[in-house]
Image 1 (tube, rainbow, N blue to C red):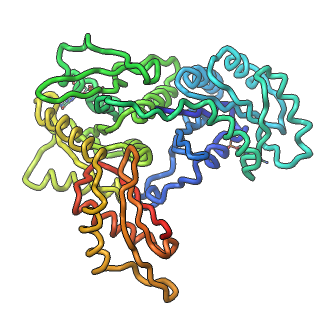
Image 2 (image 1 turned 120 degrees about the horizontal axis):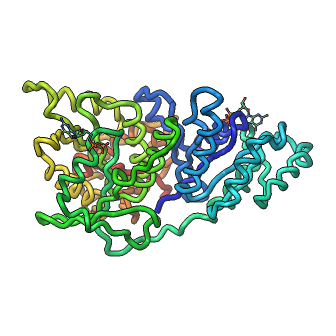
Image 3 (image 1 turned 90 degrees about the vertical axis):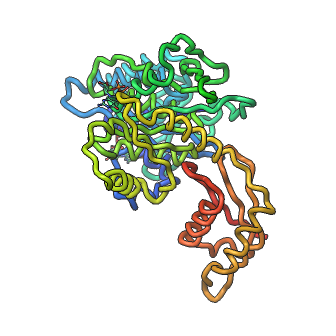
Length: 433
Ligand code: GDP
Ligand code: GDP
């Protein structure tokens, strides 16, 4: 179930500061390690056990003042259509401006939950000034300071109440989403999969109302494709094309079990691709990387290896991901994409019996125990897989706080070596016993 919270509002009210605050708990070490420029405007946040995606609309408007206001208006419309809830940020130090009024008018017509977030209320003496924002006619106001974080807890308590319940769907088919930048070949591969069967497009109960799933059942494979390519919509403002496609990508990704990330062989992997990769990783989705337009590349015996290495370097540290080289126009390895997605789906659903886990891992741990910290030795007693949509493992030990990142990586690698989890993010927890 996808829950997207869009932060809207005019410039300088503090949208990106709020965005940073909401996503900071998960500030990805991975991003720093792979040297990705932090130009992301969407990310995963968590509040009382609920994960959701936050998108900062402000990040998508560049350009001169005249495109600016119309771009912002259009973004609000897109956000109203696509988001689960909207945070309308206003600034207590400036009061209500004309653009605030315009935005409020659009939001009043929306049926989505809207939260008026009065920002820069850095101390209680400003509370009285904030009450003017009741006149926007959008109900309750939430006084916060994005800078200090005060008030954000109360806000999030109410925001998560608007989310759909995390329902576990029973007996559903695997869901795959094909994502990637414009022109990589998403529509082409979908057409290659389904041929003339486009008429079997069916909206499925329990999914977001406007998402379309394609039922595929051929050559012994049956699954649902979460279709985004077919849902492209015209935007009037050029700056919003990326914003719109990012929204759709997030949505498709959140509804899928396995994300098929398509990359253009000629252009190579770019920061946008890496952002999508990390979003899939953080959402614990299965991942398959498809390098398409392989026909356009001049190849020798080393080309595949060089490409693979370049990609793995950029997506590190989670590199245990299948990479397939396709040509949709020459119909090369298209079925392999489906087979690999299915394999990844099965890996993600895999349950390792506790006895098997312990038989394999305890001797490995004995041979290479966690290094001592401050003269103390960690003793791992047993391991068990925790129930969940994606693989999670609990390591019971005497001093969980002394297990450090490198040893966690070591254990994760051992899990991956012994039990195939290719394409699947896995989580390790260390618990007191
Ligand atoms: P955006 O254009 O809406 O994304 O706004 P920014 O997040 O870039 O913030 C605009 C300015 O307001 C920056 O100088 C921030 O440091 C400042 N700002 C943001 N939040 C707060 C806050 O809670 N209190 C105060 N005093 N300043 C803030
Ligand atoms: P989308 O925007 O990701 O849906 O991309 P499209 O499926 O619309 O493809 C964009 C362009 O790339 C079209 O002109 C396709 O014919 C072309 N294309 C797609 N796959 C391949 C491929 O494997 N090789 C080559 N040479 N062109 C391709």
